[in-house]
Image 1 (tube, rainbow, N blue to C red):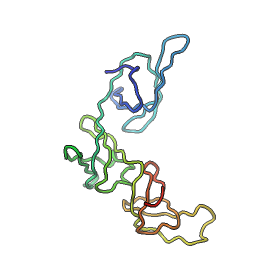
Image 2 (cartoon, rainbow, N blue to C red):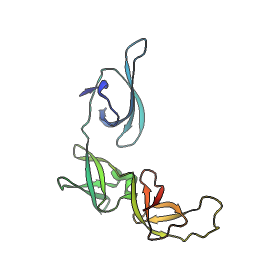
Image 3 (spheres, helix red, strand yellow):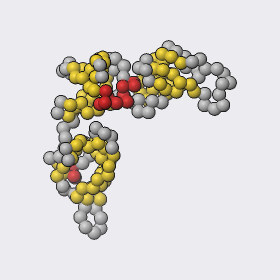
Image 4 (cartoon, rainbow, N blue to C red):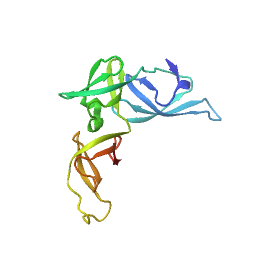
Length: 185
């Protein structure tokens, strides 16, 4: 148990049986009345963001979320199997938990897996990854009015927009947060 005075960005709270990450918080001491803490909380499982206000000094339940570096090994049905790099334990993580990170997950890649009471909560990838382009049409000069991008299929099966000079077999850097092209690798 902690109080609202101990809140920090990134801490995970257990409120009403659900896990919430503190996105931001602000201690407010108005001229009149008692102090309070205004927070923005993000649900760990659904991603929903809510604003919540606590009175200063109120006890809150801090959840123990263990963030571990794990190596992605292989896919088994709808599960992704990760190995803890310290203990070599292998844990399956469901497709729903991995979410959009599955589009950029390559075998032997290291990712951060958050675990609470033995249950994986989410998977964090590095901000950028290098992936090979497996299929893209050749770009034709003068075939555009602005921009100059074309669709490309990555080794993971994800589709992104790349510049016209990128060909099949090239390795590109991709932003894992929004799937945008960052440059050649």
